[in-house]
Image (cartoon, rainbow, N blue to C red; front, side, top):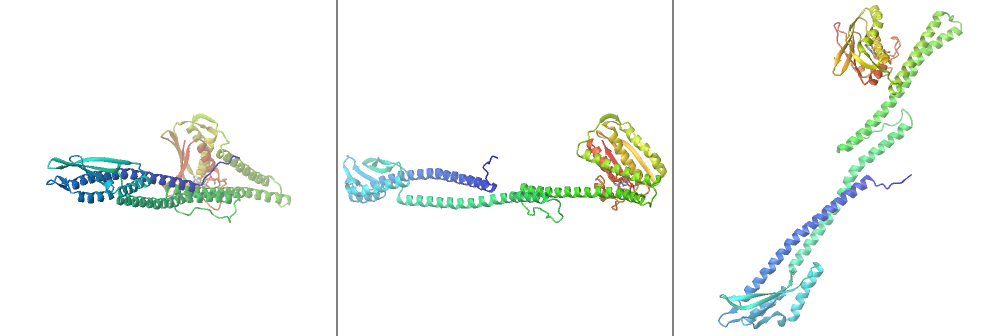
Length: 474
Ligand code: ADP
């Protein structure tokens, strides 16, 4: 046997959720980084540009028009201040003479500051920039007073404050990502468990049902049902169908048990009668005359009929009996069957009314005859007075044969069961009416084999009794 790799539903769901959520989180973080990073860098570049302009403005304000020189002391003070911020400046006057240069003022300081910026940008932000120099003219009254050249790490750099800000933002994002991952992991686990658990329960219940039913029909055996209520439609449906399956299995077993008991019961009565008669004759209590032998013969015929009926029914239900279909007029079948009961009806003082019409049909002639014989025999048997009306009506794409009597009728509660084997409305199940109790079951099976339906309902009649109306749709 090949062993295929299997993964539990819960693990599969948890894995899918986790992959999906971490993928979504990753994408979200990348998008945040991309968009905020780009706009932050644009803002930084704009800041550097504004700082350059501010430096030019500040240096410009240090020009003294009277002397035509810059206030070199203040230029130095300001220049060293700008060096700390990462701006290395040098200033020339209008004639190109060097006024002040940060590098020649304090080379060590400039190198330190630039080294700090470079290591920050390269190590923390993976930006391999290089020094950039830009020259700006300094104007006074529309005249060039000098030129400031500003050297910075380019294309841009972060100040210490900006670096701190970015680091804390990154830390925050990392923390949020971690918390979200943990949370989503928990949710994934909980969700997958809540979906997998009912499925596992259903599988366990199905196994338990199989176990219990394989042990046979022990009356002590437990009734297995899934009692949990689920709020997911499909899961609710699954547990409901398992429960229905269990109920159907139990009902099937009950029916089978009932059937065996019924058959045993039906066989026992004529057999006991036969046995009694035989023993009486052997013991010399009865003389084996024609009368006693006829009584035994009657019981044997009854038994033979019962066994034959059961055989026919099993064949029809099990699809082993093939229908011998021919074309004929349904009305002739109904009429022939009805005529056979005319004498019996007359004897009981019941009127037999026929209202038939030509109704061509393709069906099994003999089996349909049996259906109407069974229905008419019941109508005569269960009617004491009144009328039996037999008619044929045209329905949509079918013929409706109706047999309506004014007899005892069938109680509403028995109507759904009268087509079951051995079902009798008189629960005492005595054989006084002489029937085997499977006439309607046979009729229903024959009609079903033809793709038709047979139904019964109660009908009030002029005498106030209920009466039954059987309708065969073919
Ligand atoms: P049975 O041999 O007992 O007549 P059937 O299968 O033919 O068996 O009928 C089943 C039961 O349905 C009967 O026992 C009877 O209680 C009821 N029944 C059938 N036909 C009629 C009817 N026309 N009127 C009243 N009850 C009927």
